Length: 530
Image (cartoon, rainbow, N blue to C red; front, side, top):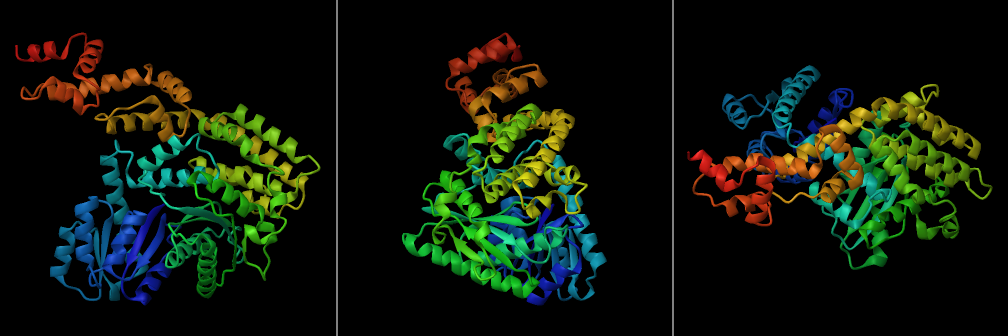
């Protein structure tokens, strides 16, 4: 799904573009709208869209100035489609000079012309990404890994703070704030869970657009019924922060009802001051979801007197490591064993149905987000159900939930058997790409494993199995091969070459060089000079 930002100072144009085509069906999603060039630039910096549709004349920055600025800072992506209210060859020529993919006159715009421009943009993006296939920091990878990053954060799936920090740095995610809390938002009307993915997507994106006017937060998709909101702030007035969040939610819900006639509810977990504790806040929010009602659409953990009695009746975080490893390694045996343990515990008399729905929903979220085509896999497993995997949400008994989990278990194990090799190849290939991008740095096995959220031992064994060589040896070979080119430059000292490739000293570089090539760097250079 390619992200599209619409930048136009005319609200009717924004609305017209949004409703002109079925964006989702065509493989696009609108990540936001902006009414002037400066606001558009800020949203580009935040959401990293692949495509920007910009009016040629806007306040603060024109569409052309915005395209030029983005070209200088970000390079070829995002690509621009330029809109204007009048046809002018001079402007068109200038737009094309900034490599805009198309130039559309508003008065003549049709769904066919807009679709054609978007397809042209897609072709350009695919061409750019193909040429940069060795780069794991391209826009599509950022989207994929960012979503997985936040899912891991919400579900406490990071092995350690160090692993969290390594991935946050890799994805340029900054969550250095004083306080955090998580809300679980449910779309109650409009039947978003019954196949109307377009409504869910539109509602979620509009929600993100609106609520960011009142508070700072991050929207995290969960499935076609729920999404999470991670609120964060540097406020020193912690007692009044929940009120700010409640006001933001109320105003956003009211406007969304006006736009789409969609009703929503939200449950908000307790405030925490450590980013590594946001999973507890998320767990709180899920625990009290059954307490909402038409008269109480926004609830905070502290408002429910019985909330603390729910906590830890069944805390599935004890299965965190096993579930994470099973999904990352596509290990069917580990998955089946863990899910069997969970269903056995769910059969105990003291487990409330809300607990069973909570743990089942969390496993579903892992399926949807940690597998590359998780939604398609889940729907195929529950193809016999009219509402697919969403049948979970109409379960009324522990027994029916256990049956749902057993069906998921059987289906996932079959998928793991089929796709395990492809997934492992994906991990190995991305490890190679990461190494190629960071040859001029010190690369450690633990750092690599943290970057991909797998154990060092698993990554090491997998890499050696597929590549026939250990990771450290592979890194050394690549560094030495590339460093040979620098040794051909007589003005560069050997210690300078060593420094450029992250070696701790010229002595260690020479030692590795000789181990890989059989000769020292000095002998290699002398041989070149005859």
